[in-house]
Amino acid sequence: MSEDGPRVADLEPFPETDADDEVNDAAETEWRAATTAFERVDAVLGRTTDWQRASEIADRARVSEPTARKHLTALAETGRAATKETGTGKRFRRDPDRRRLERVQRLADDHSRAELERSIREMKARIREFEERYDATGPDELVDRLEPDDQDGWDDLSRWKTTRRNLAFAKTARSFAETRLVDARSTETRHTENA
Image (tube, rainbow, N blue to C red):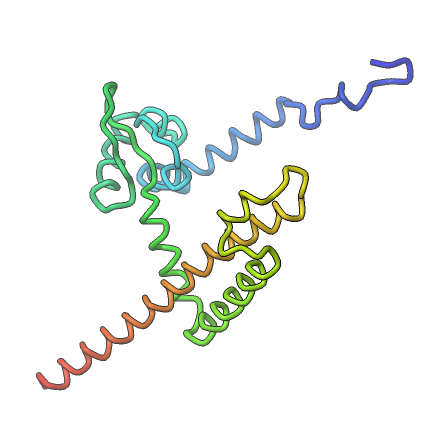
């Protein structure tokens, strides 16, 4: 502390208080009252990207370990949870493929074919701009060329990777929507023939 008062480095930006504990306790109580044990385990699993024991997920979901294990096993059977056997027991995490599929479904549900195609065209144009600006065929090639202090280049690299990933999702969503349409027509034709 200086003679003029506390220095910025001495200040705690978010000091813990008893009021914080009360708010957290109230939020936890409300969450437990508004959800089932299964819903809490599923919600916690949805944010679990690293392998964790059932007991760790149980603590975060505010359920017993046997309850968490039962629900995690059910979620694994439906494909929402991935499992891995270790020398110390089974570990769980959200299934990354399931999350990808859900994102594709949301894109197909929330956007028309025309909107998806417009987005695909825009993202392809953005990628072409990156290729021309950096005379590179992809982000991996750019990594080898960038200097550590080229912040604009590193920012563009991040945008390029994100655009490429989003393009893959948009193209997959368009194909998914097309498959739905073909399946619906095919089902409709069978019903008409059987009538």
